[in-house]
Length: 318
Ligand SMILES: Nc1ncnc2c1ncn2[C@@H]1O[C@H](COP(=O)(O)OP(=O)(O)OP(=O)(O)O)[C@@H](O)[C@H]1O
Ligand SMILES: [Mg+2]
Image 1: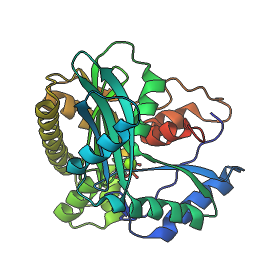
Image 2: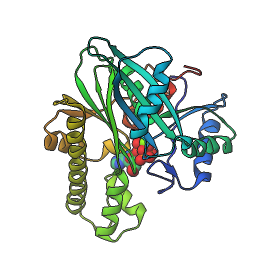
Image 3: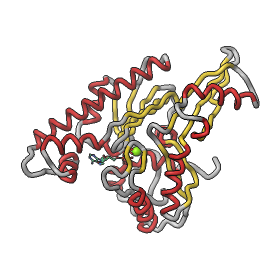
Image 4: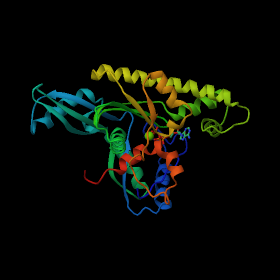
């Protein structure tokens, strides 16, 4: 690793993958480049939320140029927007001549969301070299760090502030992705309402710091109830995954995102969903100079850096 920086944004700056206020985002990008003396101007960024559609589809067997036409034609039923509104891309995953089918990975992103990201990067005086999708960045981070060799089915759960992304892989192969509109904000929200606190104090409680007037027991209780809501949402998504893919089993869950730190969340998920769960390690297979990067700090930010690590693995034009 060459350089790394993490900046927090004010609450509600980005909600459900939509940038609500641009300036703090551009400022944060700039600060990271300045603070860490990063010379390059190229930025990779990624999107998630309702304006992103990623889906594995099966089509009748065919080869060559025809695929383009068929994918365009077939994809219409999966994309709730007009063709003129989206950027559409696809990748041929597998050809099964015996079964008479091909598997295609379809990705469609609303053009206005891409512009939104490009604009904020441009505002920070940088160049948006790649606009990726969170699920693919997550997949890249998983592949490099865990190098799966057996076809075990793993659910990669990225739990951020307002979004929870579920991406399911079998071995190295993408199977399924879906987002749920829950995340760390829900803990802060619930704590704030329950104890009539400021957002800052509620956040403090969530981070495990004492706040006058609220006992640890009371706050643990609220945190636990939000974790249970999150577990239920994940369970519904797993059910949907099972019915839509005919796969019946998830062997393991790896939890990333800043909210992976919420006390007892990983335990609770493992227990409620009856699937082994552990924290995702973004630096499991990435070497860094411990004199330059404090290993304690790296351990701390590791789950939160998953998407950034996945994006850093991209090269221009790949
Ligand atoms: N130590 C911690 N304990 C509890 N929560 C934490 C901790 N560190 C970070 N968080 C929470 O993690 C969330 C941020 O995580 P992350 O950086 O993965 O989200 P994001 O990518 O910015 O958001 P989103 O994906 O929803 O757009 C915030 O809600 C933050 O409060
Ligand atoms: Mg995120």
